Length: 422
Length: 120
Image 1 (cartoon, helix red, strand yellow):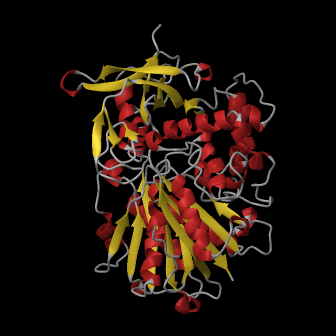
Image 2: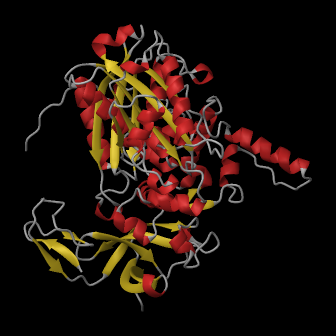
Image 3: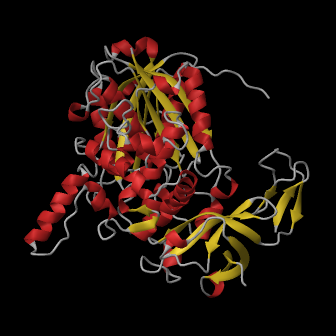
């Protein structure tokens, strides 16, 4: 079998990044959201950048034909930011669309063809009903799955049942993941649900008291998550708080060739590893508790960067569902198979732990506007490496290596990206 | 009906034109007995529109799963004859057999593969 060790033709650096707030917005559309993200990105370039110097744009979007009845977004985005007649390409990889766009942007620069590329993503999903949004999201699965009646929560629910059976756990063991992510999100002003579970409990108690309603007290955050009245089943064993929300949002990143990075910032963040892989559907999977595409992508990223999982100090991983975060940390090699949930329980993935995971609050709490998630994860990694995360800054003064793990569908498209601060 | 690879014997339902194990394109039809075991499942309460039209809802969830076929290969299907309101009682590895049902109305009615517990 032919295998060549992969490498980038020349170095690529991130010099700016930004995102819109993620949430459900009646009064903002894709263009408003992309403008927000774009303007924040341009302002974030420390020595300034003339947008006219952008050679090309690659951006991710999953299903705007379905959600807002508009396709062919490339020229629309180019026109929005005044970049016409430059090239602007839409990349689709379901929930990994913008990380895939980031990869294409890196290749375009590493090949020597372009010097300055903007990458990003946008998705607007909130304006349709929940059943329709459910149907739209199911488009990210394999054909036999949506046809059978699998919803997105159902696909991951099925993986969760296999994981529970193999390792002898229940959803109880996933709760520390949700609690940790909500705690992180409470310090993220861009998050859709910027509240800890404790905050959410307190608000409910306050509301019930105002209405003069009786409310059974919850003894703990776990207790709250156990209560099916506030945390109902979506697709067993995934309950509401195991699932990321329906969201609108956009994010952008400016990539430049390494040799010109210092024209834009004294502190470039370098792309040192990247990988992409694919996984098959449930009926063809050899192992429902692991995503083969992630392992392939991670291997590629580690090979290019010359790093091992132990070298990655923190990561944003694709926690569309609580089980997905646990499986992600195992597929990335951070913890052995079957140990991912134990690591969360033991606090290893907390902000102040040895391997912080999803300091942004993850997809669960920050939100998951599908096409925008990949570059938003990379924005968080960039922000942490530059020590600009404010109250949710990882308290490690020697932060140099972070990773992003972005998955489309329930494993269909997998992207792993490693960034370094020198 | 499924496909069986002439080179390596891998079985696939639905049938494939190209073997995903050995990448060969010589496939033959194979008739399967329709018996298998439950590999994994979910019980869905928040339904897409076409299942809501069949009467499923948060009070009346449905079970969808992966069934490992006796001959080899796996298939996704609705799982009938189990109580989707008590998923804790649904056992992995339970023996299932296939039958067909219809969803939808009139001209948009389609045949669906459903698995249920082996009838005594």
